[in-house]
Image (cartoon, rainbow, N blue to C red; front, side, top):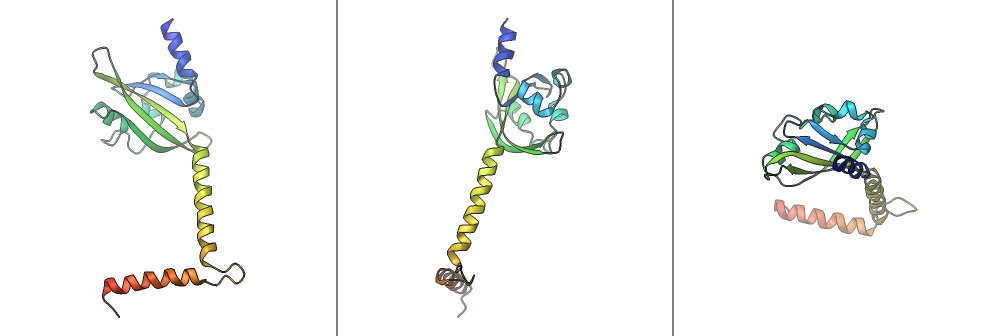
Length: 167
């Protein structure tokens, strides 16, 4: 019964999750991650995490899961994964060690939170700031640089000449 309850709890998360052992073998995986990977549970369980979600850091010392096995207590990384349909999806990967009854690390738990909406908002904000910067230094009617642009350029050049010790 406890196993069924644990599976139900894990599957209620809207974020993808899996539990892997110290050999990087998937022991548990939730419905959200299975949906993202577009595979069934039987295709994921007992597979290596790097076979399901390959990354340039896999099988290297930079692997977040290797770092957890070596003593790191928590990791959070911005990553991007590509779905089977070719669409890239940004995630925050959060990972923690998974310990046995004796306290020894026997695996790790990873959570993949889709941050597509956040990345979209960040891009929109960056673009708006770029437009605002352009509007602040150019005349809207003529497109000619305004006094603010002149003052910024003068200060930048003055500082450059001072550093170079030129007249």
